[in-house]
Image 1: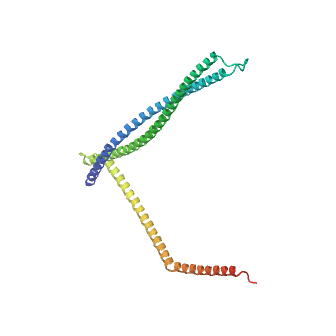
Image 2: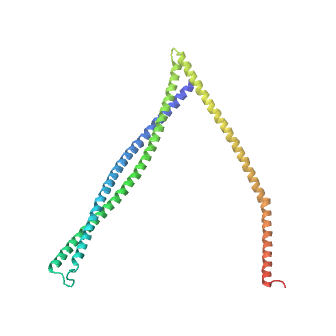
Image 3: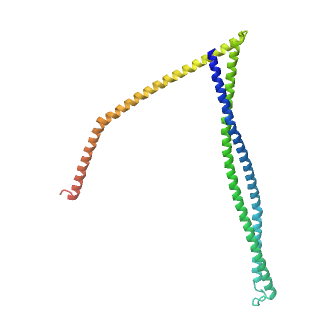
Length: 276
């Protein structure tokens, strides 16, 4: 049957196109999968660095606070050691007191240096935490972008795969029809099934053609109505431009002249004053 030969050729061409589409989409899908996996690995590493940086902050804060407290204690000791003798207020402190104060001041200088170092380490830890947070956020953005690309690639591949399956099913059905027609001896039940399927397909095609024809007629009627409405509106615009608009412009000029006259009368009355 020429019709089935044409259908077979058409569906084989469609099948080849579907196979090519699947092959073309498999590459981008694999690339998107690799990109998503790499983005996930980077995100996990960034989150691990962020957690590590967060864990370092509390000990550094405690160390800085301890160093500050040590400085405050030494300063208080120096103040206490510098106070005059309560029993003999006027008597200056002895050599032992001066030596003790000097030793405390040396300790204070060392404590302040240690506190400054502790705060510098804390500031460095906080900077590292901020950097780790920014890196984790950037990794999260890359992960979301990679997932979106992967989803798009998966959708495109799945659509192509489904199209390929559809083409394979259609071609298998036509091959089955051709086999039933060419069978020798004829397999009457198989031939009748093929005839029924062909009749059903023909009916479906006729229904689709009828639906398309009705839709075309509806669109034609809609287009005609819109065209008529457009012509009507164009005519109204032309009439307004030829008749109503000039009359309205003339009326506007009259009102402007009347307004000018009234304003002149008001100015004259104000200048002359009220009539005695």
